[in-house]
Length: 92
Length: 83
Image (cartoon, rainbow over all chains, first blue to last red; front, side, top):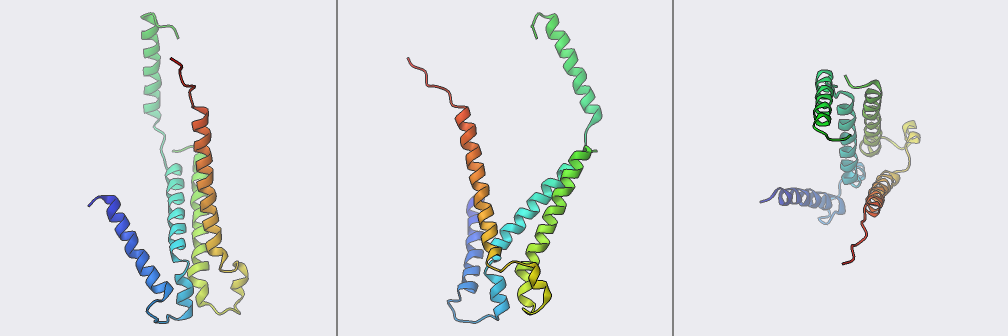
């Protein structure tokens, strides 16, 4: 079973569970506050996931380290390559 | 260490998303269990907006992404060669 099919099955399961509780086909009446919490629940999960994604991106942006030594080494290598190529006749 | 601007933007994003998450959680999950005459309800919009605003925002996001893709593809089109 591919990953896509697994995810779709999981989503279908959660969707059915939500629909059974929210649309009330069985006639079991949940207390009113529970119903009010249940209705926007899928949207809530989406918004929570969006918030988590934004926070993860922001945190990794803030904690990403510059590599000074590697940057200097790279600049040095670029200079050497330019000198070498212009010696062999390539025009820059 | 990331540059100061990067750190500012990064932690700003973290703070913003945390704020959004807390507000939305209180709105959706906690408010229904609080009596309707409590003062906290005046800080929150009517409940219908808790669904319409994210859905509209999501649609706008998809719209912007689509428009961006169309613009980039339009700029990169090459005229067809005539043989």
